[in-house]
Length: 404
Image: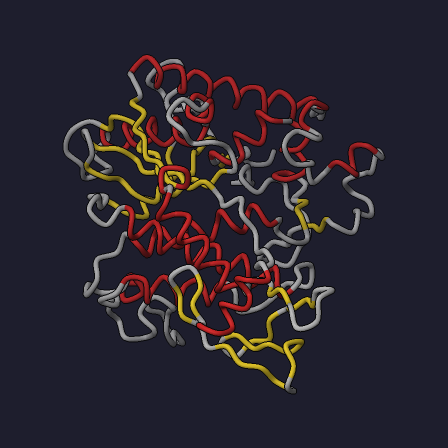
């Protein structure tokens, strides 16, 4: 008889299961994933990288110093110098440039440059807005892989909860920081905040941190009181064409939304206008001699930064949400319920679909498989691939429920 299976569950896996068990089955048991990461995932991932850099102390040792391995050359934060730059935006720019070095085949180069500009100038706005309200970080990169108790004090066999907590800060006690990006309103009366009170990741992390503290596996004094949300509202404005008057003014002065640009013409006409060494898109109007310039990515970035300076509360918000003992007891019970449901479905070999999630907010990546009854062991749609294991095999029993 084979050894029992060891389940390893993360907040992402649990949230996926709660959305749709069949989606969990395809993603975490059959290891089927998107061939390319969608834009909104990439954007959020890169914003988290920026937040990690902004929280560093200028002049301190770079995090890479503690992670040196044979063959290590340099890192984008310190550029190989081993120290965090005195101007943190220098490090932020390096990290963003590193993330946007290669343009994916699925993204137009202009759109790629605009996405980079959104992040860069939004980061500058964030750094300006919170310059006098730094987060007092006491722990970073808290990795855990922990068992949890069942309905008694005995640990649930063959189950580990895995995760990495970006930051723990000293704020109204000890709080876990979560950086989020959203297209929803973040005004204080927005429903967005109510939804976050039910967020799987935040509730799970608070629960797990209290376990680690009580077991003396985390060096921290005082209570883990809840979560501190740091939210960025993604820009809705896009690059636009300047008016005829503003286009003429820009060519003459090189100034735009507080930025200074080098503007020149090539080939003797405005159809080839160069802004900071890059060709800008120009449209002639019906009237001879008149034209309109489309913002370059950096021109757009300066307009975005000006908009942030005018209404920063539209783009940035911070809010603390405390977690009571009763709420964390509910989290514990829910965890046990989810795990029992997973084990039951695996035993029966039946993972039910949740059709209400197929087209909710974003189309599910597995929608073609479900709508067309595609066998997960057969040929996959072009937008999906099977994730390979380190041993080269294309399919494992479970990514976060692996064989022990």
